[in-house]
Image 1: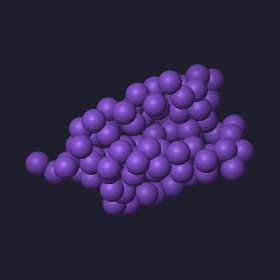
Image 2: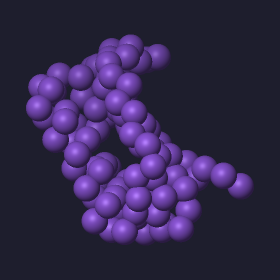
Image 3: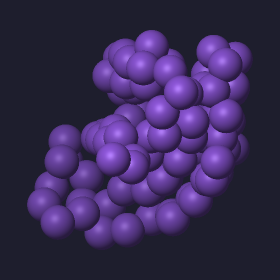
Image 4: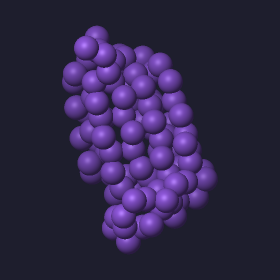
Length: 95
């Protein structure tokens, strides 16, 4: 098991309920695949450094978790096909 940190940016035009559902969806995905969530920070709406897909803002979420490599790959695969995820980045923590 390795420690990972994923930061993702959601579309700021989403309603609060939709944003909460997406955050819960990704937490559940990690937990269901045998991962353990260490910390979750919903940073909130922030201005982007540059415009992405017509958006000047984004809803930032940082999630730290411990899991196998297959969990991080599956999380990125799901985020890649979700049109409400503007950007994401996963890094391995430690070492």
